Amino acid sequence: MRDTAAAVDIYLAAARAGLDRVEPAHLAAEVEAGALVVDTRTDAQRARDGALPGAVVVDRNVLEWRLDPSCPHHIPQVHDAAQRIIVVCNEGFASSLAAATLRRLGLHRATDLVGGYQAWVAFERSTAR
Image (cartoon, rainbow, N blue to C red; front, side):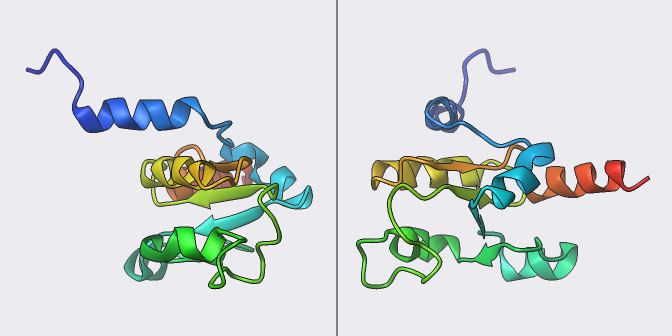
């Protein structure tokens, strides 16, 4: 049994320390306030589990280029570096690293969804009863 954290766990904790992560229960309010939700899950994950309503799909391997408003390849939904961007992956791990990277690019309001798409689905199911 390990008694020290894996390097990736330390890296993840450092990335999350700079984020004001969004709980699934607050995602709708963030969208209502103008946040852009970006789904980075794979095609296979979206086909298996479904789409995230209102989210823009951006492949993780081009995320920085598509969300950097100073880049000529950015998506039209990105307006400026002050825009609130919420990155969503499947379980909320890769999205934390992606959001931290976006902040390093100057998108200072970028963050991610706690627990990712799976936590959002669980929340939606729990409130639909």
